[in-house]
Length: 38
Length: 218
Image (cartoon, rainbow over all chains, first blue to last red; front, side, top):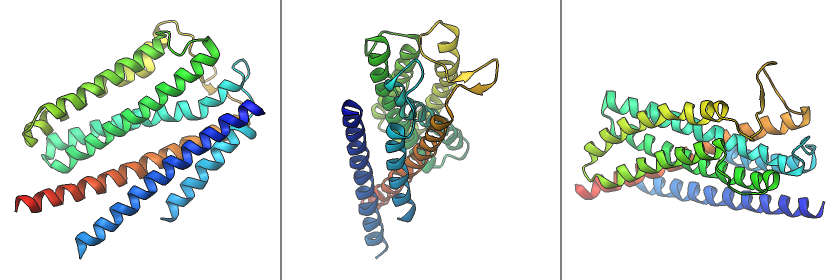
């Protein structure tokens, strides 16, 4: 489980990092679209 | 925002399940778990390249510049997922064959595919006039996709390869454990959702930049 647990942790961290990055871009684009409408 | 959160949770569950619920692959051992990421990444690459070709045909018919941008975004996403498939394949190769890269027909064909789409971006960046760039890129995107079925499905099956095949051709079924199939299909759905999300965000961003550029030009 030791090595497998390490690979699982790395995969999860990579996924969460990617997810939060895309979510942040999504939110920023939404804000810019709102400003554009105003 | 809700479906993005659902996608986040979905993929987290898929990742945990791929290590804790899914059994190790027969013959491939623990490294076989990478199939849950490798095959869906390759599938999304093919899907995105297909969509790039559809957008390119649409552009040539309608001359709508938005279709050119859509084709470009799809080619970019296709290449990102193609690189992911290549990297996960190389990691698996190291575990199974002892080398990250040994020019197996599968590895060679995906490398050629990356070069073909790399040339698409070189072509785009070398033309300054937007109409000419859109027209030539559209023609190239169509020609580039014609090679995809050969490079992804035909060539690796024509030449002898060590790469395992998921499809059992005589039985017309997937050679996969039931638990593995659950995780694999869930991953496929998750990757597709991730592609759609990334595409939409990128498209909205491109539209904003286009509007701002139009405003500046007056």
